[in-house]
Image (cartoon, rainbow, N blue to C red; front, side, top):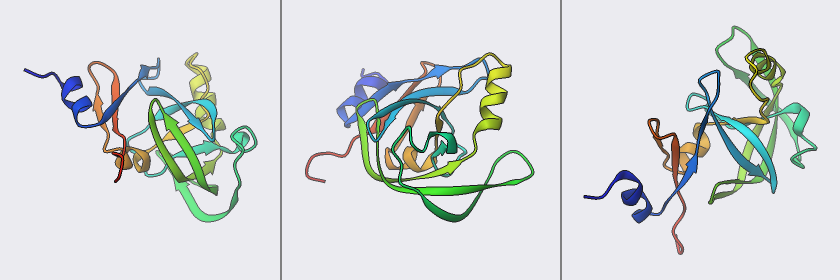
Length: 151
């Protein structure tokens, strides 16, 4: 009998290790435009985000956005948008990804209070949907489907 890993590998999925933080979030390593960073994996975030402080770090071209971000808090957050970015998570790759830029200082301050490492952004449902994500919470792995050649 095939286990989950073997079955998903046969389907073209790649496996990415997740790190559980002291705040009970999953942290994941990714590259945006070839630059490495640590991100929170957030299935509840509709779009992937990068911190405003990291625009030059990830070499992002930005433009004004009428989109207001909202989260668990009561207020809306002003945003910028950056289009046509490349993201690599493990061996999973996407091109022409739009990212929302938000102020992540409140998130990183909360992580710091818990003695957790700061993050560069949030990987959200947009990327998870494109990768037909499967999360193995027990073994702490994210599986993403790489596009097959010719598709």
